[in-house]
Amino acid sequence: MANKIIFPDNFIWGAATASYQIEGAWNKHGKGESTWDRFTHTPGKIRNNDNGDMANDHYRLWKKDIGLMKKLGLQAYRFSISWPRVLPTGRGKVNQKGLDFYSKLVDGLLSAGIDPFVTLEHWDLPQALEDKGGWTARSTTEAFVEYADVISRALGDRVHSWITHNEPAVVAWLGYETGVHAPGVKDLPASLRAAHHLLLSHGMAVPVIRNNSKDAEVGITLNIGWKVPASNSKMDMDSARLDDGKWFRWFADPVYGRGYPSDMVKHFTKLGGAPNGLDFVQSGDMDTIAVPTDFIGLNYYGRNLHRVEDPNNDPQIFFPHPKTPEHWTEMDWENYPDGLTGVLGRVYFNYNPLKIYITENGASYSTPPDENGNVADVHRTNYLRTHFAAAQRAIQAGVPLAGYFVWSLMDNFEWSFGYSQRFGIVWVNYETQERILKDSAKWYKTVIRKNGF
Image: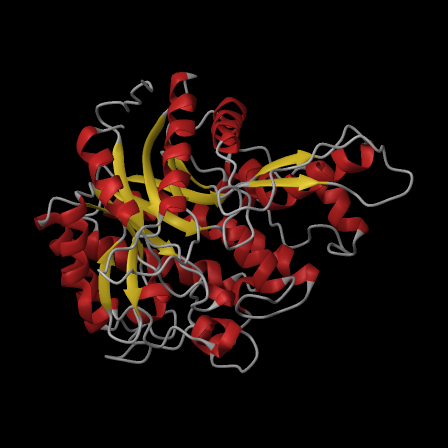
């Protein structure tokens, strides 16, 4: 008989979503245009030219969605606020109808016994701010603080868990360097400025949130992969180090008071990303970014193997699993639960955060409903089971893991992939907006009830 896996008594089980991916109502009730509205309305940017204009219609169906959460027994719900829904031009006049939506959502969650975890920025910047330079402009940091102040004043009496930014690395590198995400800029120096201003706005907003939301916990969510050299050759090891440096250390090191990692400063300078050095860093910035936080959120999806194709590279190599659904998700990401144990240990023992939340973890599998309306998503259930077990091993090693948010509550708009990928534990029919609990959701419900499996 397999061993029982039990979590600490106060462990929090939740699910996560993001505003642009589920809300729809992109131009209703005074909402301003976001960078993602503009980006998705530009032909050729998104697979099948999909967009989030309707998405899951959560703006209208939020009560139904809270009912689903209650049915699952969720203890917490991590959602993001659409900045342009509340401040249509990013600053200035508040759109009261937008603010009221989130206030009612919070009240609905609390009455259902579900703790709201609010993410202030999950990529949908007001387009009016982007028109003035977006995250490349230092003024956007001040706009973010104004926005954080508005939201935390309005909700701070009821919300006690706050995340400033979700995956600033994705905004910086995919939004401003490669241009595959909104706003679609392709400029390495711009992306470095954007990364800095994202981090700076985090540091500036934390004390404002704390002032408005008494006894609040405030943190930031970073994405992290398990970066592994495919051999012990210098090129493979350098490739893994640089990838980790770009995607994780460039953000985690400043947050924990270490400044920007010197190897990456050298790397970006060599690539021409910082022709005048890091001239966008002003006196006091790094101290501001390193403001003490109550937790770090980690989004983990898999392992990245680094094999540099070069005739002089060390030939020793180990191969990943075969590309079967059991080992690879439909996003072509490797299902590698041991990497979750690894990143949790690495972050805790390297940075010593007070607390860690897994703010996203999940898998894309598009198993449809059968003739009886059941969604037997066996691979997703297996993915979650093995990752929950991996997280529990980290707890046994001393990692202060406090909660786990499955990505995602529902199938939704998956950014540049449109609606071609399904991460939800709830199936969504985008034509009718019908929701169906998948087998993974039913299994998760028992995990929450038993606090283990």
